[in-house]
Length: 120
Image (cartoon, rainbow, N blue to C red; front, top):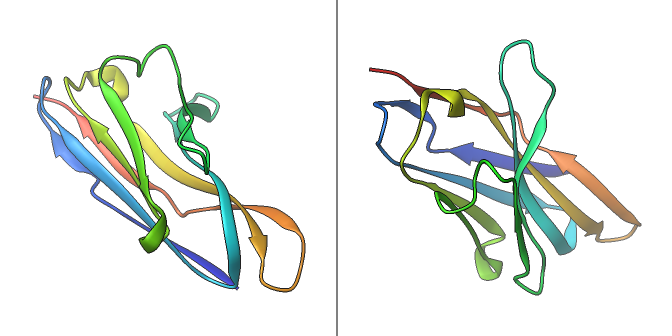
């Protein structure tokens, strides 16, 4: 059993900042990639940013220069620092990990999502 606890979402004005956190726990032997995705109403879920176990990062074009993804391996936690937020960033943000189970194979697991609303 794996749990992902997301936090940090909320309402922010345009130009503001938020920091999302996602802490993983449970039957995890090791975590490979950790990432953030988002889904706006009426749109498909899309990648925002991902970070590998070797700290290689990849960002959506819309996130480059404004968002920073990082991870704390000791805490099995991934962060997304979001600056210069725009109304177009409004969405439910989901954390996803790619991990190896304690006694099993490699899997993906999604968090429940946290709402980010950018509005004046």
